[in-house]
Image (cartoon, rainbow, N blue to C red; front, side):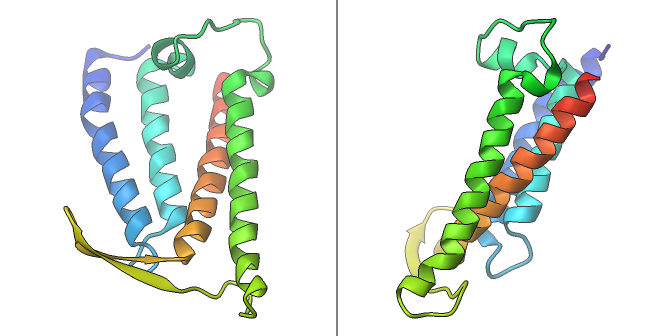
Length: 154
């Protein structure tokens, strides 16, 4: 059972954690950060929500679905979605690593484009490594949330 303080704190810090996770994810190819640490921070935000509101909050409170209480945790719809996110992330990471081979470049080669006039960053270098980072992000989030959900339900 959680307290009002925990729920209030979760409502305040989860958006901050998610904004920092997105920022680290976007800047990760040039500065410390990237898909892995962004995924870990996103999973941390989910863990805080799970601690404050319970494992079924995502389906009941956010998605408006009915939760079957007798269902095995590894067969739950949310866990299946997390596993699917893991698989898609792995596929994106592999394809982004292999794509340069089509252009005669070495495995995991990258290029970049400079975007000017971005509101928060002013200018932003978008590298092709962002696709690989996104794949890693999805693998980390999908894998850790699968583990968190299955272990947390038992």
